[in-house]
Length: 288
Image (cartoon, rainbow, N blue to C red; front, side, top):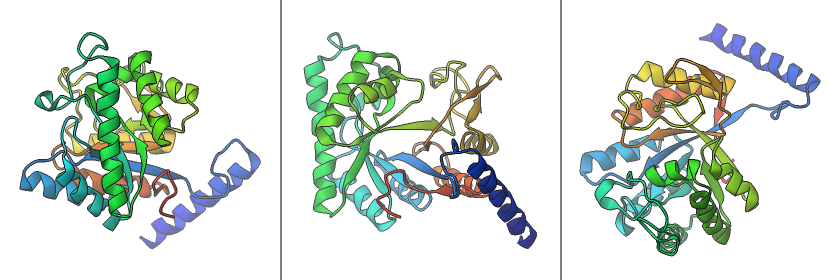
């Protein structure tokens, strides 16, 4: 491993020199960092809860379910405490108020839910996590929508604007998909937008997540997940379901807490990213 370390130092120094010649490199003269996030606080049985908490050793941000699709005061407090223990950034993971379908059923505004009802629900969900975090001496720094709400906000300006207007009210950052209405809404509302990529999901050629209804949309193979994580982290590109390579610039990579062997994937992903000379670190700068 000695020679490996020596090689890595040489590579990084080379990158540094190149960075000084080309000012457009954002991390000129310093190490590149990348956030690793996981959707958690969703498990309801002992084994699932233990698996979720194990993930926190390896990620830098936790998206905590706050009562829409899953989660209650007890699960939020337990997850917040664990996040504090591991010095992890806390994000709210609100969803359509639809526990029955785990927040995975799309909702059309004014048809399935009124904008007022959705605003009320999302505001309550985010506020409840903020209150619990505050009572434990921690703060929530960003919001990442869950499931169908996330997917609907990729394409629908109305959904994205509604979420952005709620986030503005709380003064938080918005985490969401690159090449989406979410990013545009964040810009309109003057919000910090954190682009996120998924290491365990297939992408379409337009840079969006392939529907879970399609066979193979969730990447089950660990090596494939790690390859996708490395390519997104180092080159900002991803191989789509059709086999095409597209650019996808991400400031955070997501692991799903409900995937099989997530803790193992999280550990391996962190190792794979760090082996490329990239530091896994929260984007908010709460924990230096």
